[in-house]
Length: 119
Image (cartoon, rainbow, N blue to C red):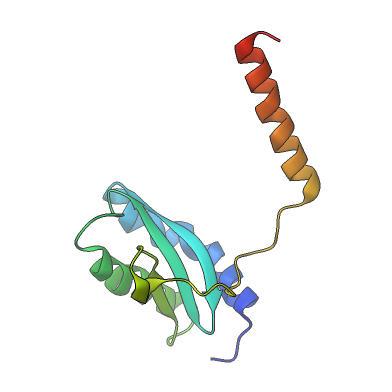
């Protein structure tokens, strides 16, 4: 596959809501973690996170649909804590947040804490 990790990541990010419908219907969700060399790394959460059928869901639902929508050679791996399903440390994980967004989020959090303790 001759695509940049960033391009594949962005394409998957756009399609995740559509692909998540099945997982959502079973009380779960999909978190996009990263992309590396044609492999997409996800995490199944909620009821699907610890389900014994998570491998089947990853391959037969998520991977199948993303292959239809993006590229037929795309591979999807559910990062589930096992060594064989780890995400590489150099996988593309999206554009970093803008510094001002991080600053605003921290200020909001501190304002909430101040309010709770009566400052």
